[in-house]
Image 1 (cartoon, rainbow, N blue to C red):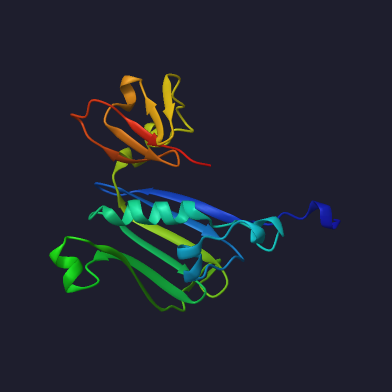
Image 2 (tube, helix red, strand yellow):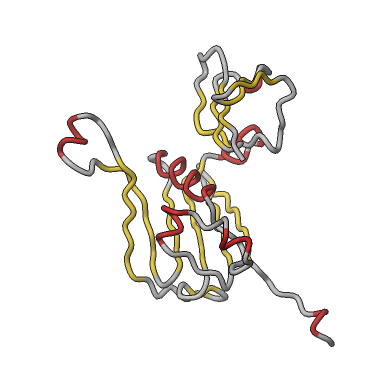
Length: 189
């Protein structure tokens, strides 16, 4: 067997149905994440130079913000020997008085080493408490592209009734209001 016949497992995706919700576990082998990736992304020159497999860009930031806003969802990231957890809090009394919350990231050392997963070497993102409709294709514009669109400098207005009351950021639905008259999309990229 020569080297060209060797297969390398880069990662896994696991979806489990629980009684009232779903859990999603994404694992990327031999690829560490650092907390700076959450704030700065990991794209541009690093991606172009091919330094890393499975790049983490600003999609990670968007997903963390959306998922952590849902009180029923628990999001944890295990990587680089740490467990990251997320919640919204008031960074100061002034912020609290004005109702301005900020995303708080808490990290603690983790030696999680399960069958095939090593927290010091690999990355695992575990999301529990997802509503079953989270995997509905209307959550993602790239799965059901709109055909009637009016564009302006702020984004796109989706005219089809199936998008009524929904707001998308980078093709992911982040907001849905049943009574809204129109739909705004701020797709970039």
